[in-house]
Image (cartoon, rainbow, N blue to C red; front, side):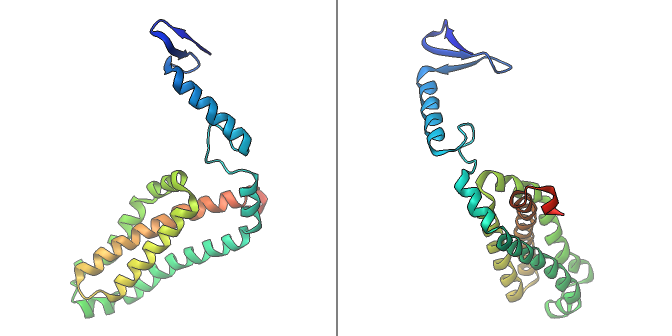
Length: 189
């Protein structure tokens, strides 16, 4: 409920919130205009990023292609972890890693992967799943290239850390995209 407040004729107070919220009359008019525009375009006034009907139809028609691409991205991450574990003896010999320093080749990836998973999921919610997934794949692929071309221990460990960032983005976004593409529980089974 909006009502006039003693602070002035341009001030309104919203008593619906747990604590009264003071609004300027100009802010209320802008909010009303954006609600009318959202209604005209078929979007939710409270969430202008909510997809409209046409967005849903496009996603539904391409959801199997999207699922295939998400599976390929997940395969890329699993394959990378497997290949690195198999290649550790060759990496140790070629780059002169000690046994204790060799653990950082794996740990740099795992620490950044696990540590940034929640942040990447939140970034996907705020910036859009598709955009964040593309950035994650690009980051992962670029870091993989640097890992393959690295000629020093530090370069490899840093590139593995960046690769973990890309992997966390792919992992966090892939699962949320599957849930969004297949809303029915029977389709996700």
